[in-house]
Image 1 (tube, helix red, strand yellow):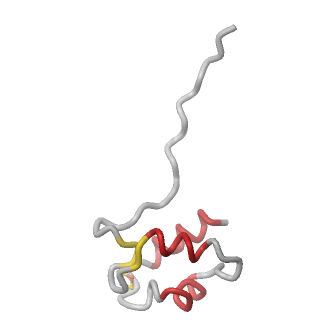
Image 2 (cartoon, helix red, strand yellow):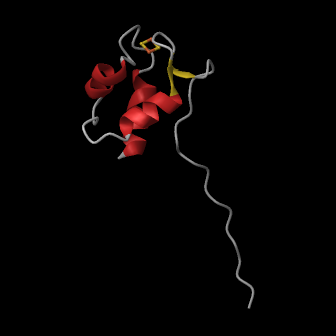
Length: 73
Ligand code: FES
């Protein structure tokens, strides 16, 4: 019996900014952010700012950081 395979849906996982950072002002990498989000006590944008400083500059990355937070839930 042959089983039809569906094409996997496009991932909704956020991606870093064009610079390669998730926060240009603080030069925070996606790797650093994901490591931070894996910690149980990091649940809000404020938690991220306290932990690694991402988002503490111009605030242009806040929407992106919130998408990472949402994806980590
Ligand atoms: S890009 Fe993150 S605070 Fe400016």
